[in-house]
Length: 464
Image 1 (spheres, rainbow, N blue to C red):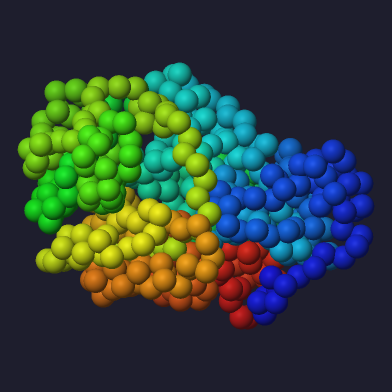
Image 2: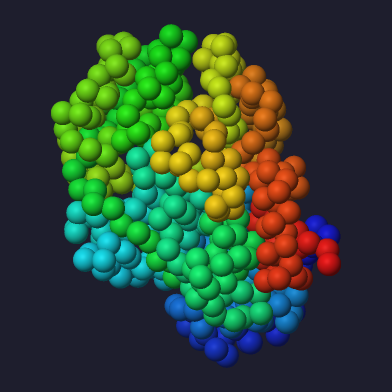
């Protein structure tokens, strides 16, 4: 879409111009690869871009950016394509597909790694894990490193080692004028600040340099408990009281028909809590013991293992649509657990869930304002979602999501940009406190004054 919200159709010159410099990596509607190439993780986004360009390096990215700027074509940038709002595809514009840029270069002695944005969290973790090293990169193997990093990065190591951006040391970025910049704390420091949590508003990151931590063996896996208000509340309190080495991601959900869950519990409310203790086996067992004591587990795969195993396992089918939102809150309010269970009973979605992530620890030790991530002091993230198959069902499931969000809100309205949908300026205001948003808008004015990178949760350029 253009800045006024209308569709943008690429001129007829677009495909020949792209192919002139990128022959073989430009996929147009007449290409047999087109239908596969145009889709993102949520397959209900059935958009038809004028072309999908599979970039190989920063020079390719620069060529595409220049052409989009010169023609006025909408530019959608895709890494892993997991965004809830479908920003990784376009109707009539150019999709800049970074999935083929998936190299990783590891300096094991220096404890750093360079990664291209299309490498997935699972691929990166496997590569670094061969050296007994890791960077925290969310909790899903197929998500792209570029997208999760620019959003902030909340994952299995958030309490022990902070957000993904807390380990970002530098980046190669192609800006709206096609210039390739090297950025870090000392060079283009304002842009480096904005990249760490500001999303894809300021350029296309083509390489990212991360700090690596010595993390090889952890205590990790999934603990499945029957869901009651007492169990849910107790799990939150236990995770909050646990050492910072323990990070937990718990989904309250009706049990799917998985082989490790007893058949008689399928379709009943359960808590599926994935967790990682980034430390020794004995200390990990002690930290997790209060959670295991809440109820007789329906399944328990938590054990000493290599960290990279947290990203292994079969890939699940891609969903069509996901109505959802998230809240960053300071309290898990009295009655919150009951509200979750009551809403689960009323949902008609294929899958409905409330995800609970207790935060704090290393994430909270970074000063406010050090990065563009806006809500360091949040105690929890509550991520609410309803997966469904038909667009006609959307209003029903969005209403369900909003109802549960209202019941769980503590009134702050804060949210994590990486898990928001397409609610325009309202969502941007939830993701960033006013002072942060003002600073982001100023950086946007300097690096993308015409808002070329607008197909995202958009920060508008400040007015001079």
